[in-house]
Length: 307
Image (cartoon, rainbow, N blue to C red; front, side):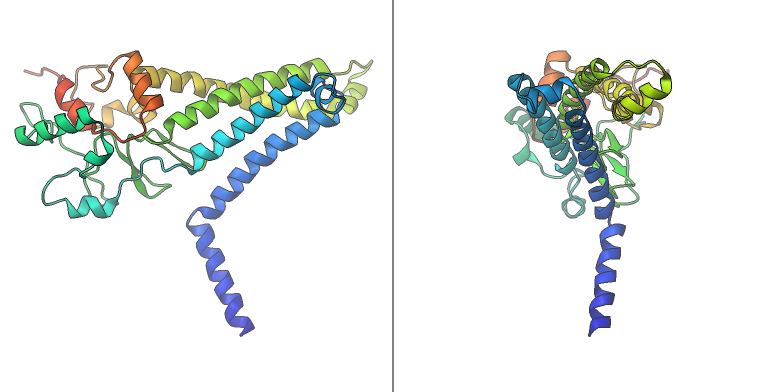
C-alpha cells in the first residue's frame, strides 16, 4: 500500500512538472520573493523608506510605496494568470467544414459582427489579392487554420490570438487578452524600480576605504545591482510595447514581417491593423473581447504591385 501511494505521488509530481505548472510556480515565486526581499532590505538598512514606515516619519510616503509594490504584484499575477487568448481547438475543428473561423460573434462588438456577416455574404472571409498570394497559416501542431494574427506557441503548446511573444518572466504567452495587463505591469514596475534606485542611492554611507564602504553598504549594493540589471530591460520593454500599442502591432509582427503570410505580400512597412493612435490605444486598453481581424484586413490590406 505504501509503495502504491509513493508511485502515485511520483507520477503526479512528474505530471505537475512536465505540464509546466511547476516551472510557472517557481518563476512566480522567484519574482514575488525578489520583490519582497528588496523591500526587506530597504526596511532593514537606514533608508528613507525605513524612516517612513518603521519610524513613522513619513507615513504617507511609505504607504504610497507599499501600495505601488502591491499593485505591481497584482498586475504581475493578473498578466501571468489571465488567458492570453488560447484558441479553442475543438470548436475550430468542428467548424472546419463550414468556415475556417470560429463563430465568435458573441465575443465581438456590434460593428464587427455586422461587418463579419457582410464578409460572409461576399465571400471575403479569406482575403486574397488578385493572384491568391495570401493563404491562411495552417497550424501543424493543432491541425487547424487559426484566426488571423494567431500563432502557435511551442512553450504553451497552443495557438494564441494576436500573439505577441512568450514571456519567460511571467511564464506565459502575451496575447490579445492579457497584453494590456502586461503593459500596465511594465509601467508600474518601471516607476517602482526608478523610485527604489533613488532611495538606495541616497542611503549609501560614505567610508574612507572601498573595503569599509562595501562592508557597510553590501545589502544596498546588491539591491542596486539587481535594479541596474533589470531596470533598463523593464523600461526598454515599456517603451517598445508603448510603440507597438500606438501602432497596432505585435512583437512577432514587428520582428518577423517577411516570414508572416498575411504581411509579407503587403506594401513595404504598411500595417493594415493600424487604425490611428487613439483607436489603437482604445482597443488595446479598453477592449477585452476578441476581435475578428480578418474583417479589418479585408478592408485595409494593400498588396504589393508586382506587375
